[in-house]
Image (cartoon, rainbow, N blue to C red; front, side, top):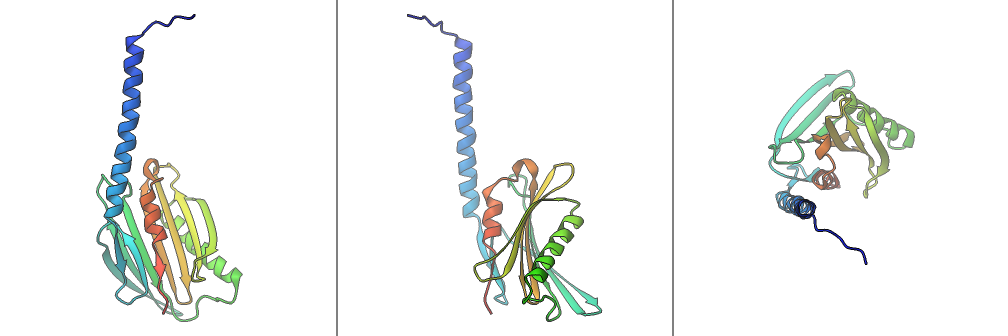
Length: 196
């Protein structure tokens, strides 16, 4: 028979660690549940798309005159407060002159998606960590990706979808330590391009 001695300090530390873990786990579940309920479905007035967002978008529009015609960039953005795990939600809708993308060529569509991703990475000074090209349920060419800045302070998760004359890019910015949260996924997965 072996005898154990009771160590009050060790017992208090184990008790404290168990309850601390339980507290953080519970707080995470409550915070996530509350935040999920705060998402509202945003539907474009022109019935082009819908997306779920945790607040109200701010809208800006810019038209650029190019040799091939006008390019319009509509930007919807939402900055959040420090209690939210993500700092910024963005949706850009870029409308090009007709027939810019060759939808008969898989290579052309993939190249267009990769060029758009490289532009996002360059503008944000954040290399690509992950990317995957696929097609959404409506057959639109799609790329999902994750970027991280070189100092590993900021993470950007995103999705880009192509239509013949438009590109939709949804992005979520967060600090690296808070980047693995399901709220970013709720936002990105909710982007639906509506049929015409």
